[in-house]
Image (tube, rainbow, N blue to C red; front, side):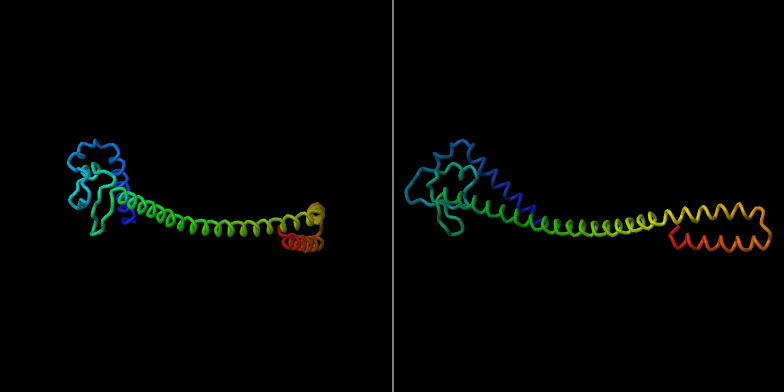
Length: 174
């Protein structure tokens, strides 16, 4: 990550240098008369002196001779390539993120679909059991009324039937 920051800082510095070159007073041009065949060493040039050179001035950079215009074009091309590489590298994590996001959303959708299916099944079961529930409820109310005046033998029969009704309700999911 720190290499990227350093690289970006260098790109910004080069860009600022190129912008600064257009706004510098060309007062240094007098120091560099256009002499045919004269080669300037890049290591000995200051930024201001470099900017004062004419576009056709020959500059030697690490043993390679080129005009100022070629040097600027080369630096611009390298900067553009670096920016392109950075954009490409920046797109890779984006792609990975999108893949992880898509997977997560699909898992959530699958879970939601399963939960919805369970709820629908339970709802349908309750819907079909609602009439049976009403019958059991009515029978339970009748048993309750009957138990108030029942003999002990009848009470035992009522208890047995009430337990059967409770078991039926449990089977229905209540």
